[in-house]
Image 1 (tube, rainbow, N blue to C red):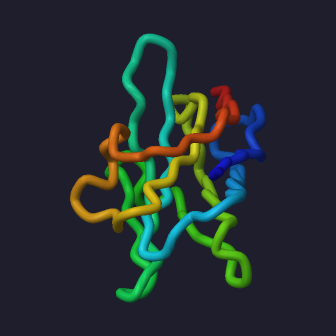
Image 2 (image 1 turned 90 degrees about the horizontal axis):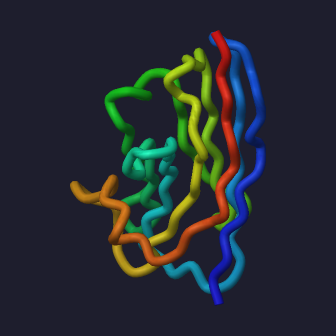
Image 3 (image 1 turned 120 degrees about the vertical axis):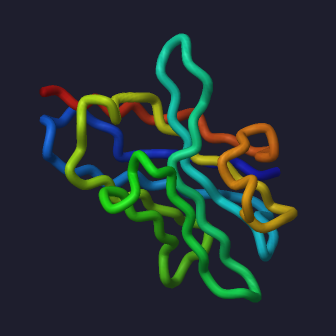
Amino acid sequence: QVQLAESGGASVQAGGSLRLSCEASGPIGSGNCMGWFRQTPGKEREGVAAIYRGDRGIIPYYADSVKGRFTISQDNTNKKVMYLQMDTLKPEDTAMYYCALDRFSGCGSTWSTSRRFGFWGQGTQVTVSS
């Protein structure tokens, strides 16, 4: 059984940084897609970043709103651990952040489509104040 656990959420001031972690347990497959999504009340879950790790190497994907500020990565020694380094945070980054796993296929052009991900964590809250 796959389980995902996020950590690292906190309250920070605009311009600050945070690093979120997601640790998976169970069989995550190979050539999979792991992603970060965020959601605020009343809005749909939004894809923030995703990472493919498989026979084509490691390929990151980013939403335009975070490109250049956020960096997604996986632990060098434990592929079940994923990070989201968030720099130059803005108030509009405030949300609940979730990690997600599609263990059967790579990311590709649908990396930000939430319904393709079969496994989700419980979320970690990020609050950015101005």
